[in-house]
Amino acid sequence: MKRLKLLSLGLVFSLSTFYFMSFKDAEEKTPLLGEDSVEQEGEGCDIKKVYTNNVLPMYYTYDSNMPKDLVIDSKDKSINAGAAFGYIEVSQGLANHHDVFVQAFALTHEASHIATGEQLKKFGIEGGIPEGKNFNSYKKAELLADLMATHLLGANYYDAMPNFIEYLDEDSECFNCSVFSKEGDFSHPSAKRRVKYIKEYAAKILVTEIEDLNDLFEEYFKYILYLDE
Image (cartoon, rainbow, N blue to C red; front, side, top):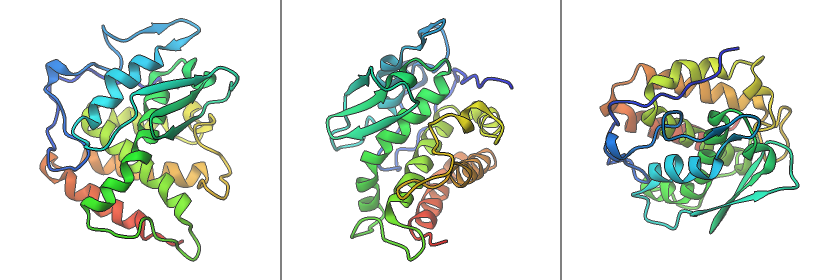
């Protein structure tokens, strides 16, 4: 299977009306894989640099306190991450992972959990994430974080979207690693359901004009918010 190569673009799209992010000029942006990236054979990429140089800048206009610190749980060998106010915690397994995309997606997903509340305010939605009769708010929160991560990575690394979609095929390494809980649980949808929405939105990015991406994001955000399957 072909590994995803996130490209250094000559253009970074400006979406300043999108509430918790807008993008710096291309010369200020660090590519996920490129001359400035750190990749050590057998040890994966330098995940702290991925977070500081690639993930945090996507939220640099977000006016709440995005966590600046990344903490590695050296005892956890799984592929996992979690968000808290003040820091992002990642497993040693994720820190050691050989593919920077898995790291970047997991980190952006966790940062997006923290951004969800402000995004609800931007859309004038009060009361938090609504409970559905058949689909609870915890699962919706995971799908919203997936959506935000896909939107941010898609807008910043647009040329990587075709490989991104291929990378999430059900027989792929990424799909089957523990970034996604394969069967799902009380708070997480199944990997199949999560990947369905991620791939659908990623494909939409490819056929949507840049000036229309904010409208596309709002449409999908509200669709997931009121999902009840």
